[in-house]
Amino acid sequence: MIIVSDTTPISELAKVEHLDLLPKLFGKVMIPQGVFNELQIGQHPAAKFVQNLSWLEVVTVGNQQVVEELQKSFNLHLGESEAIALAEEIGASQLLIDEKAARKVAMTRKLPLIGTMGILLLAKRRGLLDSVKDVLDEMQLQGMRISERLYVQVLTLAEENQGE
Image (cartoon, rainbow, N blue to C red; front, side, top):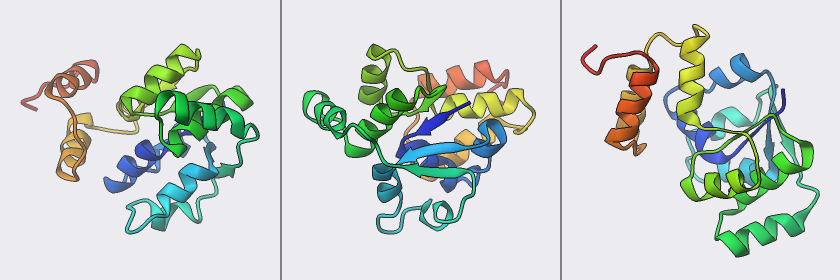
């Protein structure tokens, strides 16, 4: 299984100390150079982790023309554009991406998607997480914006009641 990730899922999982879910679920994860660079900026929560992860492979996107096209035509960030281009280039099994605009573009390009919420649900189903609610609550405390609708939907899919 080949997984390509954008910046946000890695960042959000790092903030709540659940970055280890990615290798447990997928083995190796590939990120384009642009995503790696974004993860190194300033006091990024994932910066201290991504330097030495044996399961994280940094790859240079071959077709920079696609990257530029995605940035210009759809106003996507470099990391998102490179993640989409790389997923296409290598025929990724999943593209791990959260941003709405980027997901929309990826869907039109017929790329198989999973987001941070999907990772949490998959981890719960595989017995790697006891409580999705606890992780969602911690993500919100760390500044992740999760709409009430999505929050309820994810807890329903995780078969967890909000009151638990």
